[in-house]
Length: 248
Ligand code: NAP
Image 1: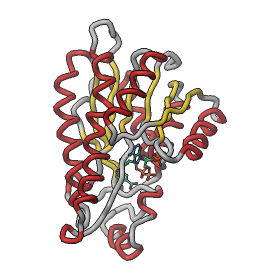
Image 2: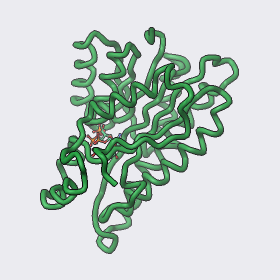
Image 3: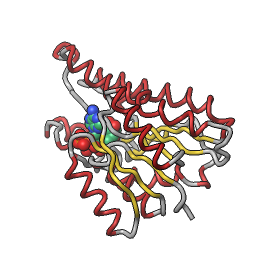
Image 4: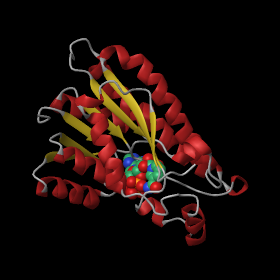
């Protein structure tokens, strides 16, 4: 059913991106799995896709490098044509209290997380929104509860994720007339390399704020992403959907 639909997942070498990529492939989409430095992990993602009977390929670029994104994504479009979906997931943290945050910590997180909204989507949206593309499409961005609530030690990250939320909502308005939905997933704490890096004391404190008393699994984000990619989700747009075990 989805075999002629191609989906790009950025950060498919990481925990959440891998789950989104594998779940999308299981739903029949052809998945273009993006990575930056972790080629081996991206190859593992593709191997999991193929083991599940799915299809896809790899693509490499640095999401904070506008020119690199444009060159690689133009090549991808020349090869594959207009995509059905984009899961703009890749991102980083550089946590510290605000007084301890360096200019480099601030810039790295903003340039990676927020600038990538423009860097990745800009080369792709024109084709998706073209009048020739009659079937519409799906754009999913990855924010965080940190962008909604503001987390101690994450002023840079919270700013980048709040920015993604605003940009997602604005783009949803612009693309609604073309039947392209644009939604944002805001995960809470999900078991990946990113959260393994959290100080154990702080991690326990965070667990205390989660009514379900556990971290989420990457597949629990992947399941939502696959639903948002589906035809059935065609009237859901401009939304921020949190997946966080009831965290407030
Ligand atoms: P992860 O396992 O650390 O994966 C991060 C991914 O981002 C990797 O695939 C990495 O690629 C990619 N990436 C980082 N910098 C990049 C760059 N400059 N250019 C291109 N790709 C880059 O993290 P995750 O937990 O899966 O997080 C995925 C997304 O979910 C992020 O946006 C994160 O902010 C968000 N999120 C995560 C959680 C959580 O609890 N885990 C909660 C809320 C939101 P390479 O390794 O190939 O370089």
